[in-house]
Length: 96
Image (cartoon, rainbow, N blue to C red):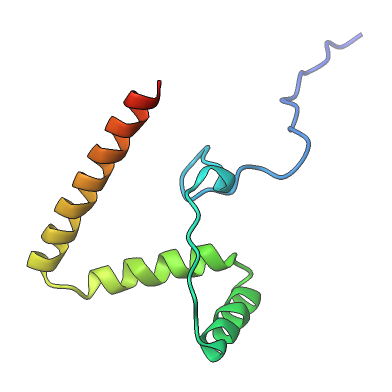
């Protein structure tokens, strides 16, 4: 009798769908925005035809917008993002 080859079992349900490996969208901070009706309709249509969630369309749009900024503007944004990450880390430590 031939030995059975063990296959990795796939987990039940949908795989994590975050922007990076292993991340879960449900763990991302939420953002609520108001959009003009025509922009919301365009976002929904883009999501449909691209078969991508709306959050990914918005993320891609922000990345594209950042690529169009000057190096100086990108450095300022990176600095501000670094400050925000630092504050968030300090708050997390204080809660524990």
